[in-house]
Length: 409
Image (tube, rainbow, N blue to C red; front, side, top):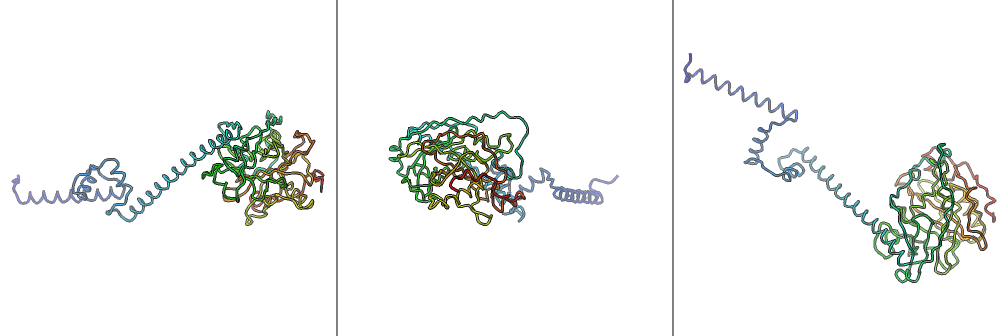
C-alpha cells in the first residue's frame, strides 16, 4: 500500500484536482450559455468585482438592473437605456392622464359655477359613455336599417323648459358673453362666448384660465347685432359628456330599430340672448364634414354666417341637405335664421379631422314650436368625401331629399 507521502500518490491528487477544476469550468460555461447561474458562483463573481459580498437592498438591486453599469456589455447597456426611456415615458403618460382627469373635473365644476352666476341650475348625470355607432367608420352609408330585434324606444319629444340667464352677471364676469345654448334633456346647457378668433376659447374657459375643455364659442364672423343669418357655435366633444358631446348623439344609430331616435326625442335647440329672450330652433340636418383638402371635399359651413342673396342661401341649404344623415319635416326659406352646432367626431380615426355638424332654423313668428318627428327618416346615402368613400368602398348616389322643403328654391 503506498505511503501518504508517496510522490506518485501526491501526483495523482494533483491530477484529480486539475480534472475537477476543468470540469467545474466547463459546467459554469455551459450554465452561462443556458442563462443559468449558480448562486455561489454568482456571489463569488460579485465578490471579485466589488471586493466584498453584495448585500444591496431592493432599491439598489433595481437600480443595478435598470441603470447601465461600466462593466455591462454593449447589448446590456442598450437594454437598460431602452428600459429607462420606457419607464420615463410611462411616468409622463400617467402624469398627463392625471392632469387631464383633474382638468375634466375642473371643467365640470366651472360649468356649475357659471350656471350659478347666471342663475341657471346645471345638472349632471353620471356614467356617460359614447355609443359605439358614433365611432364606427362603417356605419351610416352602406348598412341597412339595423337589428330586427324588438326594442322599446320612447320617441316622445321632450318638453322644452326655456332658460333666461342673468346676462348682467355673466357679462360682468366675462364681457365676451353672448348667449346661452340648451338642448333639453342633455348636458348641453352652457354659456356662449365670442372670442377674437377660432383659437382662444378652444383651450380657455369662461374665466380666462387655460383648460382642455375650453368654452362654447361663436364664429368670429357673427356680429350679434341682429343681422346674423346663421349663428355658428363650436364646442368640444368631451368624454365626460360636457359641452357638445351630446351633439354627436344625433349621429344615426344603425344598430337600433329606430336609427334617429335621439333626434326624435330631442328635435329642438334653445338659444337665449340678452335682447332676444329664449328662442327655439328646429333641427333639420346633421352632417359629417371633412376639414382637410387632401382627403377630398371640404364644405365651408363655418364661413356662412350671412347670406347675401336668395341664391346664396339656397346653394348653402342644398349643400347641407345633400350631406345630411337624416331628413325631417322642417321646411326652410330665404330669410330664416339658422343655428349651427359644430363639434369634433373621429369615425375615421384621430388623424382625419372631421366635424359632426347639426343645423336648426329658428321658429318663425306665429309658428308652433312642436315638430312632427314621426315623418323624419334616415338618409343612407349622404354626400361625403373621397377618403371616406375609399374606406367604405362606396360613392354618392346623388340627391335624394325632397327639395320642395326648400320653399325659396
